[in-house]
Amino acid sequence: MFGKYWLEVARKVFQAVVVLGLASGAANAAEAEPDAAVLQTIRGLLEDADRDMRALGLQQIREEVPGRAATEKFAAMLPELAPEVQAGLLEALGDRGDPAARPAVVKMVASKDEAVRAAALKALGALGGVEDVPMLAEKAVAGADREKQAALLALRRLRSEEVNPVVLKLVKEGAPPLRAVLLGVLAARNARQAVPEILPFALDEDTSVRCAALAALRQLADQSHTEALVQALCQARNPAERLQAELALLTLASREREKCVPAVLAGLSKAEPESRQALLRVLVRAGGPKTIDALAAHLEAPAEAVRDEAVRLLCSLNDKAAVPHLERLAQSESLRHQILAERALVRLTGKSPDRLQALEAKARQALKAAQTPEGSSSPGKAAKLAPIPLVLPAPAFRGTPVPLKEPNVEKPLGKPRPPFLAPEGTRNLALGKPVRSSDPAPTAGEVDYVTDGQKEASDFAILELRPGSEWVQIDLGQRATLYAILLWHNHAEARVYRDVIVQVSDDPDFLVAETIFNNDHDNTTGLGAGADKGYVETSEGRLIDVRGVQGRYVRLWSRGNHIDDKNHYTEVEVFGVIP
Image (cartoon, rainbow, N blue to C red):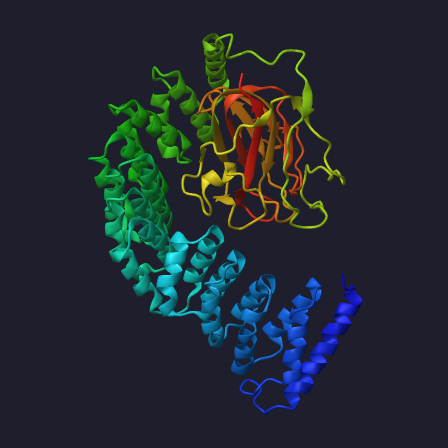
């Protein structure tokens, strides 16, 4: 490899050549015919076997040799270069942003090399125009994986004001797969003027189109579209579609608040149980004086699932106006409802937790009696131990500085973490499992990011929840014996997340739970003061020893971090075995 010193020397010499070449040309460098010696030097750099020298040549194309004539000369080099260099040059031409390169770039879309085709498609985002929309749309649906990603990126970046109408025309005329993809493009382009024409697709005959339209409306809709979204939710034909409609309404309620309430209340009066639960969650997000009365009215709903959801939501409120309803709920016949109500009363009124503790003890006894010998079994004493299989993401920063003003933070280990031993057969049980959160409409990202296997530091793969004490909860699907939990909040920088609490339970409401990690040293969350230390986020994540605790659900709490008040999750892995 070329040494850094000599690479810098080459860069400076080259810049001198460029300056001299331009000085000998016309006064207007942007219109001058580029100097032949400069072009030849760049060509030599691009064809050099050393990657750093090729990068130097591409840098000069991006920054040092302006003008349409130069762009055309660089684009003319494309057919004569090796595929790897073609891809780099296409990217550099895209960065130049000169449409003069477009004809040559379009030709490269037909290359035999997938990387070259993808680079050409991506470059068209900066160089292309409305005439390229149909081809990009086709590639976004039917191209190879890299082509699809590049074409979508290009469609989102095209700058012409005529792009959105053409995309919308293709949505109306295209087959369902094309419609679904292009509806997402309209959302990414913030095409709010297209909302009236997107709304009918929320009732399309094709499931993928309906879900895509609802996902687009989540970003584009305003208060005037609340009624239409409520209708779409009530007419949802499957859980996936219902979820998209709920997320659209939750996002809208987060922005518009009480303006959404009339349409939501009207929908509640005629919704089926599944949609009614979703509308109750939307109503809580919208807030306002009618929320508590509406929840209280559903405490006696005919459908058990609706009653349970009304109880959960009422008990989650931070409004003392709910206290009279909570006091009545605390005397109900349901032990579950009693415990949830008592927890809310302790939090809102500061009443003694004595009755709550007695009810929780009763719930523990009931759970113990209900567990079968098979459900409470554990691996044999002779189980062979082996390191659990860990695949760590790439580090996003160097070093792990400790925030000096943050209390209760341990010092970084300063070396790689030792292997963690567990019985053979231990694996990540959380991968792909369903996730829900205390924040039903995340500020950014989706809850399924928590278990999707993507753990690299990226703004596009991170879940962000609202400020305050919030949680995510993983349903493993069945009871398991757990040995370790590996957690990444946001390891793009050295953050310390506050009040991190990890619990395991067999109950989705965590009526009975075992706390396996708690660094809430001053009991801010109200789940008890913890003895664990805070820690600095790194690409290694936080490995928590679960010590063979059994359960089906894992809940993870946090309350912002030392940089801001946001709660983030990149990935959670739960290592265990199914008994």
